Length: 433
Image (tube, rainbow, N blue to C red; front, side, top):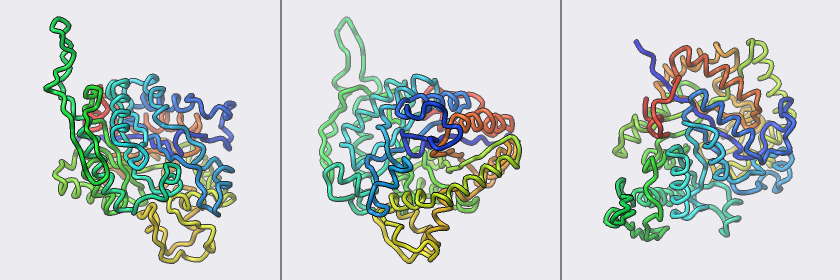
């Protein structure tokens, strides 16, 4: 029986910012982190390895939640600094031929028309290889940078996002596929009867439309979402082509994917049109002992710099975890930030949670390329699909090589991931299996 293929993608956590600057393999150009070089190297390797896409994470603030100051974040270059992800997209596209590229663009930081126009433009210049990581914004600091006192309540953010996504997709659809005629003799560049205003007036937004550019190659570029709360999951089921989530255990992965597919059916969609990719942090080396030693050193570094993980937890939830005893279980807490994450932490100690965050606890994909590939194959066979989303906030060129030229070829030899792209456009490759 033919093996079922699964997808591979990469989550560029910590966005367009400094990466492994503290590591032994940081290279000689760490002071040039703002240049696209490292990310171009990554994109080329992913294109060669036939990945589906790379997501460029983003946030637009210098965090200050932990201890009420930005010092820890700046000390480690943790979630700051970051350059705008949209700037990086053309560089990655120019260096590749098939890789999908997804910048993160927040519905609480962009007007719908501006975002629709930006993504449409990027899809044109990449010839159909762009997506949109649709996020709602969760930290009050970012809202303050845009002139507001704080983020809207959690569930209301998704109400706003529903209207936003509806308007953006209508703007993308405003030019019919054959609206551009290019008849030089008549002359007729575009048929006005096939270009339609949207005349949207809703609770949050008002827009006449249409976009002042033709329908892009994909029509509707790929939409990515990561909502983990019940309200976030319903939003994702309505709009997302691909959903990203964590992989704490095989059983949790199965339950989540089953729920996503049920939500898609409830939203009137084909569940096979929504691809769920699970975060994975593979550590591959030439021997099992070498890979395990690297995992041990990660744990050692995390324990030495526990404030790094605690500051990240604080940023994600808007809760200052410096106020809690490291070894006392966390009491019931509420947040207007990432509710699904916080729910998993209640009852555990801050130290336990911080170590888990720092060393990426969950399924331990450490070992030789053959061992890790075998684990991933078994996990996907048990879960049913749809693939993995690799991440490493402090990656370097060595890590890129180990994954793209070590692990992925082993997966290809096993016949569980693609060896070549079948289509020109990102969405078509994503939906190919």
